[in-house]
Image 1 (cartoon, rainbow, N blue to C red):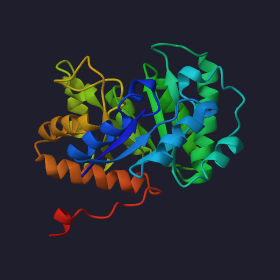
Image 2: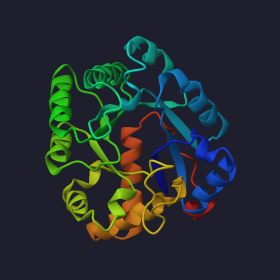
Image 3: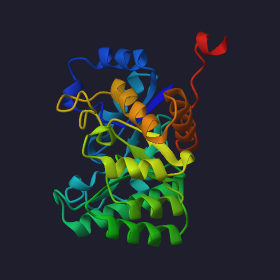
Length: 267
């Protein structure tokens, strides 16, 4: 069993074949998916999909790209939305200095609000970090000093220092299709070094399809391709990586119920 810990099933890229996409995920061994919210004001769209599919759960939060337009949303407002049984995470929130689509102070402010929500609810904070390693580490250290909370660095593509700081602070690290790219040797070195009990896999679909699908629309079924490269990177069989990353997922996303075992799993 594999879990796609981060995808965006509410995006219009999937409007024409969402049912078939879920079926393909199952066929590839991906039994659970977490559809990640990028705008609190559009949370109902994300929730509707999670409610429609038993194998899909969701988060609630504001992506750093949208931090400027959703400035002023309070922690209490987000906490209230997390009460729904299908909401299993907070975010994604964070810092993106590569695109800089929102003022940096708004991004930092939004990140701190989401840290507060994670602290209050115990739900994992899904963190987006791009070209902002030093500021991200500083904010996480400051926020953790106020009281710890579960979190993960999603779609990890940052430097080793942030990865190790994250592990020190109790965070998990999730790898996407970027891990499979030919020029990602430095990232694979980091993936090889991290503790086994902190690893997750994801797609970030519809973006960042792994090799050999690079450049095409990504989808949850392709989680298996990233998991295969992670297994090769760490010198392990795929089934061992699948078991480890799935156990890690349930430890972090503790609100997600474990699915009933398939007949083949029981034999």
